[in-house]
Amino acid sequence: MSRPEQSEPHIVPASKRIPELDGLRGLAILLVILCHYVGAADHSALPHLLHRFLQSFGLGWSGVDLFFVLSGFLIGGILLESRDSDRFFQTFYLRRVHRIVPIYYLWIILFLVFSRCLALAVSRLATVEFWGLLSCSVVFSLPSKLYF
Image 1 (cartoon, one colour):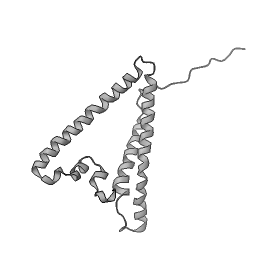
Image 2 (tube, rainbow, N blue to C red):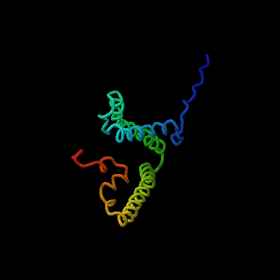
Image 3 (tube, one colour):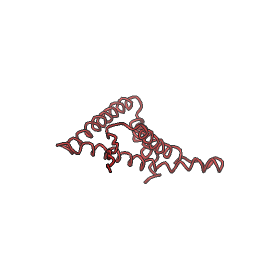
C-alpha cells in the first residue's frame, strides 16, 4: 500500500494586501465618526423612534476595538513575516518610525503654520476650539463642562 502524498498547506504571504481588511478598517472609522457626530448629538426633539435609532449610533465606540484588533492582526503578520531576519525588531521598528514620524511632524508643522496665518486674520481662530475643529477631535471642540 502506498501512502498518499501529504501536501503542504497553502500559506498566503503576509505582505499580500487583503482588500476585505481595508473595508473593515473603513467600517471601523465610520463607526467611530458616527458615534461622535450622530450618536452623541441631542435628538430629544425628534420623534421617539427616530430619536432611538440615531441614539443607537452611540455604539460606534466598538469601531475603536475593531480597529485595534485589525491593527494587531496586521502588525502580527508583519512580525511573523520578518521573524527570520537577523535584525528582527530593528527592522520592524525602523519601518514603523519611517511610516509614522514624518506624517506626525508634517501635521504639527502644518497646524502651526495655518493656525498662525489664520490667527493673524481672525484672533478667535487661534483658540482651543479651532484646534478641535482642525483636528476633528470631539473632545477638544465640545465645551469642557461636558467632560470635566
